[in-house]
Image 1 (cartoon, rainbow, N blue to C red):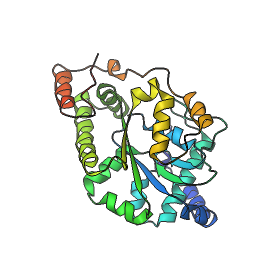
Image 2 (tube, helix red, strand yellow):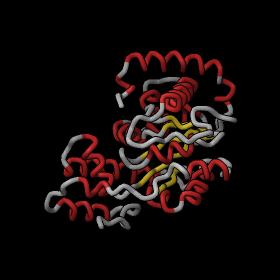
Image 3 (cartoon, helix red, strand yellow):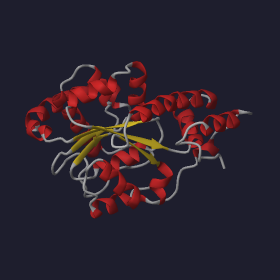
Length: 274
């Protein structure tokens, strides 16, 4: 799929629609209770989790906006919210063209009943922004004026590293370096955030127990865990994790080095290669 962020026609359309939505939805934006961002690593399963939240009637989560860019550019709250909504509508209308479809039939993706939660799921971008601008979280809270919620999606590091390597056409060693740079920033964020602000979602747990994990996720966002929404989301969740680690060659010593680094991280130390 062509990156829409590099398409001038797409950017003009998004700017036009966001201006229209700022006027049309201003009162709804005033009713937002939580602002949600994803943190962590690219290729970790953010899209699946974001799609499920976006299916809830009282939430809108855009796909790969990226929201941090517009926040750091000094946009107003309503412009950020409008761009999130415009992106979510675009994604739902045109459909995802990747190797997996995240549309959930007959749900609320790209629209809402009552807008209580709004956000974006481009987790890698948030982590990189934190590295470059340490006060990013404070600036986000000041802009939105509501409590922020951060979702940390974790996938088996070996699969995650392999997926980054394949997607970016880089070596496994380089991919591992990028991954653990993100881990260090995420660890620091987990240290400064309370359990009310940050939740860790394990990709494998979402697949194994989607009902339980989705209920926990909705409650974290102060959304009603509606049974019909959870059952609709369950239908798009993979039957089993994708073992991307077996699709790349691991140079001698690389696996051992990754395992050593994983052992030092609380939310990674239960994972193994086999």
